Image (tube, rainbow, N blue to C red; front, side, top):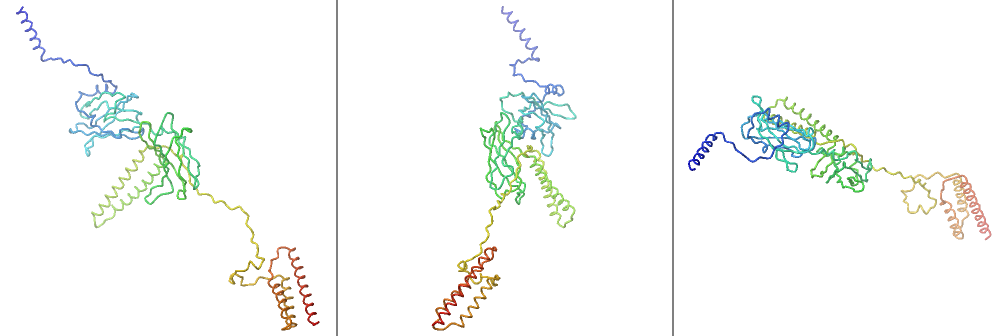
Length: 463
């Protein structure tokens, strides 16, 4: 028995020695990685898989981009650049679509950079599943393969998400405001609805004045905070009363809000973007003209000239970047929000104009200064001239017949009568009936005075 046991041990030892150079390692089965068409194709075209990890070095900006915005990718490797380009393969769990992003090496920044227009992708999360190094002289090399994530997992550093465009959240055709022409002193009522099953918060609409521009070239703005109205199912806002300084045309500059997932957005007016880009282009053309003049003029101070040229060149580059950045902003046609502020019309006084009544009583003339009276006496009617003539004749007769002692009181009475006649008002002729009545009254007065004169003389002669 002992010999047989030893023989078995020797056989087992020989078997172990024979299989030592060809070992088989058994491991627990790992989670299966879902294979995509792009991964299968790359495995066929690429060579052996490398162990270079790039997924934790890729930087994506912005991490969450609105549909239509540009997404920028950058990758920095510590190793010497062994590839001309690096291709990043992305996959969408929602649409099962794939997208490639090509990064090109930039010797100045010493990193790989690339861009992607989110408008060419679908809305949803995009995950990096593979990185491949590309060279013209060698075959593609798979740098890294990344397993797919579950939908409830957070995005990794190299992943990104495309959000819906603001115009897909807002019902722009529902923009309403009253009145269309806002008068000075009035208020503007604004309302806007969202698409079905869409909720937004922190809504606001910003208006811009076309005419009102300050010294720095900035347009006057008006911001209305929007609140949700349960009855109208719309987001509404009211402005303060408009003033004379706000007269002119106004347009929507932008609409701002936050979607249901807490992601803010700004939607600009296409007209505003085009207007601003045109103004920037005018500034660029003016600076280029100045730059050409500075380059053509030979100045004694070459350093000062070069400094001016460099400054102009830098300003032009900044304006061109600003112009390009405006073009990339999210925009839509918001012309339904245009309105005009007009002046408050002046109401005309429709009441009849009251005619001035001429002064008829001498009492109304009391208190007037001599300077207020006319320098030239008004023309007297014919009947008044006749009355004055008769009065003067009576006055001459009284002077001849009067006696200094006995008749002083009678003369005083006669003079008061004559003065009252001289100070009678000079009324204007209004119509023929009043003139005839005045003539009759004047003649009657004259007869009374003559009769009194005869009686007085008879009484004097009697005594």
